[in-house]
Amino acid sequence: MATFAKPDLRPADPRFSSGPCAKRPGWSLEALSDAPLGRSHRAKAGKAKLQKAIDDTREILGVPADYRIAIVPASDTGAVEMAMWSLLGARGVDLLAWESFGAGWVTDAVKQLKLADVRTFEAAYGDIVDLSEVDFDRDVVFTWNGTTSGVRMPNGDAIPTGRAGLTICDATSAAFAQDLPYDKLDVVTFSWQKVLGGEAAHGMLILSPRAVERLLTYKPAWPLPKIFRMTSGGKLIEGLFKGETINTPSMLCVEDYLDALAWAKSIGGLDALKARADANLAVVERFVEANPWLGFLATSKAIRSNTSVCLQFVDPAVSALTPDAQEAFAKGVVALLEKEGVALDIGAYRDAPPGLRIWCGATVEASDLEALMPWLGYAYGAQKASLAQAA
Image (cartoon, rainbow, N blue to C red):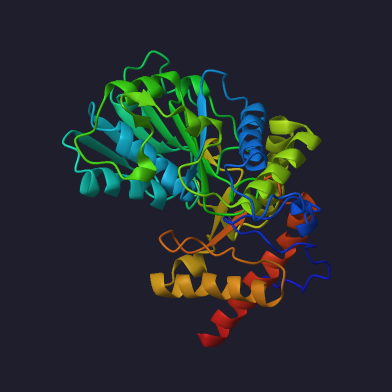
């Protein structure tokens, strides 16, 4: 049995959680000193901050000028729900799921909205649905990057520009790390606490002109809660896209998002963010290639995420264990890494196969991942030794 010595080098920052994610390098509370606390978000200072958050988002992500951007309640979940409840039902819908959050949108469409014309396409963890079977003349709801599976869309080639339906894309762990082809996407959502490591509870909703047209020409058969309403009297509520939020936002969270956006611009914008995430993934790829007991959950490199990197123990001795024993093995590895203070919150998502999930987004330093990798071997070796003793 292979043995792994206890490493001497430790990551400077052990935060590899897939959400909330690590703060940008060099972050401190002093970065939030300009937040207009104790002020109304409707005051001139608050409105200016909210508008800047929208403007900087557009600039860094390269969102087309004719797309609308709004800050909405309840994180990415709120943004997706807002889109689904406001837009779906006008035509048939195809629902795509290859991990737990995509499966959640299926549940909402089928059991909550109770849409009549629904087709569901589901893939197991580590795989993706056959995109050639999807009908984009229907509305389509999907995640771009499966946060809990480490599986991402390979590209937008399967989505026709001349489609009749709307594409509603949950991009919360893809935005700021992967290319999003806006000409193929009608709704894009994400949350502040993902790729840029902002604070929670706020979501971003990006709408194409086609999505806006649907809002203005279609009225759902069900009542819409106030926090979902984007029209009034048959007209778009323009204030939503100028920082006039539906509910009261945390100006402290807004300041933190602005700080993250400023850092993103300072290092070179979207191209630099993508390059950092790709370099981080490469660190893990090199380690996995050199250690055959560890493998990626994603079945092929073409669909492998560069943010939420999901790993599993492929050692035959571990794979032969019962499902409960495999889960205990993985949890043992995670617990040892946390006890040593070298990796926090990297266990696989509760619905996913047992293993590890390591955030590799741009706010994580490649040097910290380099330091972490030998610790994975050490923790795996320690668990393997315990397994041998128990036998």
